[in-house]
Length: 198
Image 1 (tube, rainbow, N blue to C red):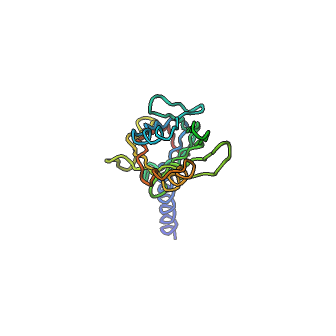
Image 2 (image 1 turned 135 degrees about the horizontal axis):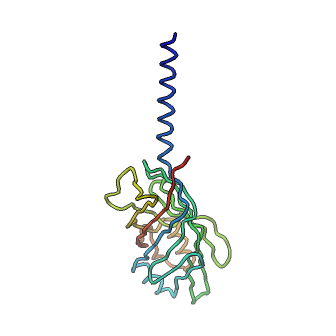
């Protein structure tokens, strides 16, 4: 009887240790930023339509690079599945027809296949809803588990392409057909300051 109880206690302890080990794979993001460098192809297409790229704080645009602060999130270091919420707004102003498209409340979700960056789309101050904006391709050579340097987790060279939902929305807004799914949007560098989940 004592042997059975001891075995049960050992099994329970092992299960608890396993649960704790798994829990430590989840890391909470509390700050950071995502820098998106827009492709020349995208900028040329927008310019041909008379569309200017802008921003609302706390986002920033410098040259072809837009920066969005990370405000919260969680990521599983063992699988890379997770979600990062950003603040700031990216705007597209068309002077020809006075159409303004704003993209905001960005969320990077790596739990989906493929990973996506979604956002709330606002057209001329009317909320159209949350769209999958860009499909993401993680950098070649990315290995698991993800390994932060200190408390900083970085992913450089994430490729962004237009999601079918976003390409259809842009074509509808601007009355064109040039924004096809898979259209080259640019590349992103993601930096998240993380702490272990308790």
